Length: 274
Image (cartoon, rainbow, N blue to C red):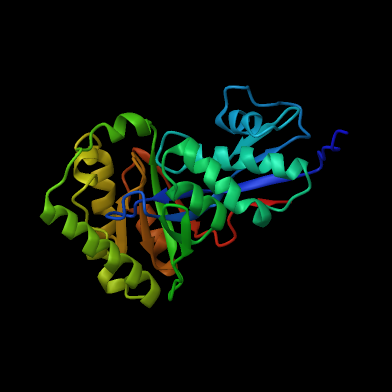
């Protein structure tokens, strides 16, 4: 007997910014701009779309429409959001909630992505720390906005990862462990004066920014305009910053003209099925 598939649903998944400096593949923040998938539409996405591929692989049936408010290939977690959305769409067809489907969706999305940080932020919302299948929301003691600078050019995550070394020195490893611990503590304590140091990195940013001079300039401009912390978003080429809400417009206005600046909330809800 076939289960009746529902088609009066919409899945909404936030963008995300991963690494936040030193926390490579371990910390990410969900952003208040979204990708949506739904069944009832006149323009279904092609079968090659990552949301549709995830949907089909999980047993989804029928057409899938996709609407995204943020671009792919810019370090904003597009592929993770698309895959999470496609996987949740299968649960939506079966009448399940996003909360019920979180653990299974994270497992499958991580297998597809190769790392869990973006998918975890997209699913759980807020700022998350990830290790293996374990996800914990980092409590925020202070309200923060996120300013994102998005250039026109794209970066492929796979090619960006090939820039990274297979081994790092003991000193660099200790440096990043300390900065990651300081980052989590600073967020939880609201210690904004520590956040700039907490987002220093020796594992990946310098190698990636060597090919993205405008992004390096954007990060410098964020700090110059008063951002608490600024970092290469994911594998780039976008940059992101934690800022005081009252200072967000000034930080955004200071960024290079070669990209688009957004002032975003942290998405506290994560992926939803409605």
